Length: 337
Image (cartoon, rainbow, N blue to C red):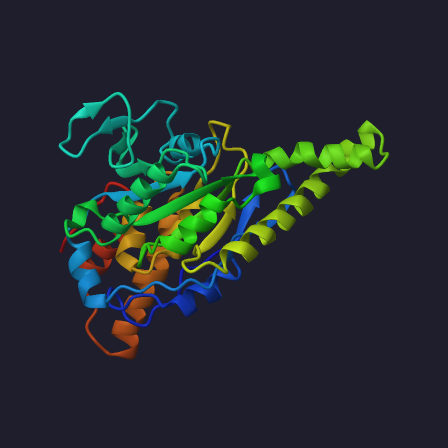
C-alpha cells in the first residue's frame, strides 16, 4: 500500500480539516488490491462536510466508541466486512436501545463484537427499490442519528456497500434514492465496492469469448479484472457524484472472504473522510488492523502541532503533554495530563 499522510494541520487539536484539503490529499490515496497485482485508487467525491470546531471539541469529549452504519443490498457481504474489521469469525452480540440482548437485529440495534467492543455497528437490512418501508426506516435512522442530541448515539461514518457480483446493475434506483434524499450532514459516506474478486470470473469469460485458450486467458485475467474494476468504479462514481448528497470516497474491497484479510485501507479511507482530528484519533485507537496507521497519524498530527506551537509560536515545550497526545492515538491508551 502506498504511503499516505493525513491532512496537514496549522493548529493542534483546534481546527477542523477542510474538504478542499481532504480532497487534495485523497488524490494520492490508493488501496492495495491484492490479487490484481496493481493499484486501484480510492477516489474522493466533491461532497463537503463541516463541523464547527468549538462544537466538535465539546462533542468529542463525550464519546468513547466509534459508531458505523453499514448499508447495502442483501448480498453485499456486509457482515463479513465487520468481522474482518474486528478480527473475528464469530457473530456479533445484538443489543436493543435498552441494552438488552437479542437474537435478531434491526437497524436501530447495536452490533458489537467481543473481539473489539470499541466499534458499534448498525446494519440496515438489504433493501431494493420496491421496499419502501425499509427505505423509510433506514432514512429516518440516518437523519435522526446524524444530528442525535445524545452524543454517544451519533453515527460517525457510513459504509455503503455495492457488490460487484451485481456489476450489470451497479447503481440501482434504491442507491440513487438514498444519495438524493438522505442528508447525512457532517457524517461521511464511504462507498465500498465489495466482492470485487467476482470480476475475475467476468474477465475469464470475456477472454475466452475472444478466442483465447484457457492458459493464456488465465495469464491475462488479472489485467482484464483490473480494467473491469476501473471501468465500473468510474461508472458508479459518475452516477453518484451527480446526486444531491454524494458519497465522500469510493473504495474497492477484495479478499474479504479470507479470515486474514487486511482492512488497513478501509480504516485509512474512513479516517481520511472524517473532518475532525478527534474522530480520526478515536477510530485509529479503536481499530486493531494496523499499528502503522496509529504511528503515521500520531506523528503527523502531534509532531506538526508541536512544531507549530514551539518553533513557530515560541511557546514552551511540555514533554509529558506531548507524550500523552502521542499515546492517545494508540489502542488501549486513555491518557490525560
